Image (cartoon, rainbow, N blue to C red):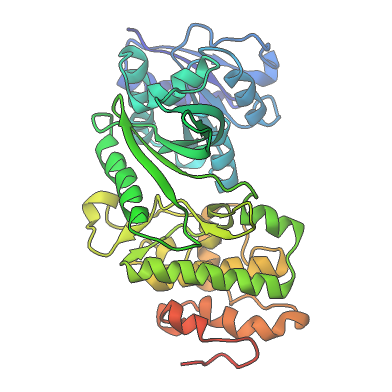
Length: 412
């Protein structure tokens, strides 16, 4: 099947650059470009112009290209969309949640990176066999939800490059669960390591029995698609609760609950490595629950699974050592907990920036943030949790839990 690519971008030179990369690798490819500034917004019924791949640049027509992406995703059987943007973390997450098949940072475009993104997408289009990406992406492009025996899908909650998360009901009994479905299978491009990491996530959680750690109901593999069924937490995420405001005493109590959950993980030789408010949920009874162990790592796992020096996680909550690709241990989770505690107390993230790298640099170089005077009693704990050097932090969750506001920074 001949490769047909439709490129949408405000910048003529950038459209030409993308076309050059594509036709250099696929000389027979048919590449058409569209200037949204000159030609305006594409109509609602635009279905991809017979292409098997669309590259969408931001901005589009001087406006937010995410609106274009959402429009395209409403069209049945629309081809995969590769979103080209600023590289800012929030935009990456939003684009993937809106249905982008992949994301390219405009300033970091390289020939090899572009080809590595496109190849698995066009392979999927040319070979319509069962695969994780076909299972999730193509079914949803047709305006439907995936199907798994024993579950009735209700709606999609989120999606990233590794998996899609759905709210579903068990066919027997109707209990609501959260289904996390892998988007790739072992024989996909790069799928083996992703598949292994996904299965490890279940194996790690299954060993833990703690009131503040999510309960796993089932692990399944159906038609080569791995999935995890976990409890549904109906009261939303900690991010939502922070946005509504938390009093200091409540924030302190939630921090201690989280510390207890981390202590259970650390005792099992597990570091979470992706602690953030959206990975912390609340049950119907308002009990806090730590979820999503996609980046968790047992001490005995080796670099062949994750790649030596590879950076995973969310820059806003990432320890200085993790942000720079260094070895991460339990003290990295304690740092992330400190960032979350600061945000619970103040409603603000301690470090913000226009790019992910600018935030990572602040974690390494900027002073530990200072709380307002009325919250000063918690400052010693923030200082110890968010110390730049791991050796200056609380060395364990047990040491953190021994600290109480008002007793000073040292509690060893």
